[in-house]
Length: 115
Image 1: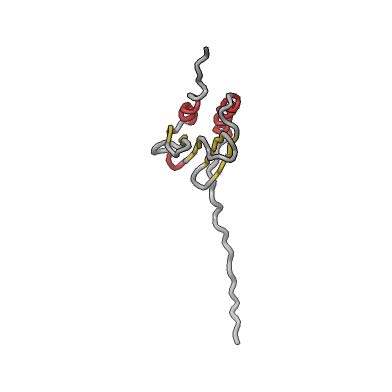
Image 2: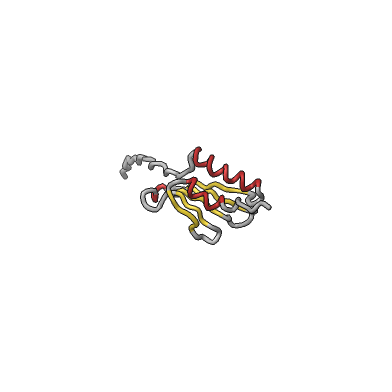
């Protein structure tokens, strides 16, 4: 009877990189969020950081589907723009590389006629 001395070398794989919002990006998004909460339009939010996309979801109520999703996809930065706003039905409302200009589509909801 012979025993082989086998050693298995454990080589950890590189950790998966997550896409996340930077502090300055979050400041712009949370500024808009605060104004919409003050106006009574939005009530809750969620942030998801995945391997290819970071998502900021906005809810009217927690148990519902998100009203809007603000996504950051760095791989699309050279093509269509890394930021996009999706509506509840999945339609792309605005896309681009400048976050402030992309979020203007949501700020139109704040503009109301003052009588």
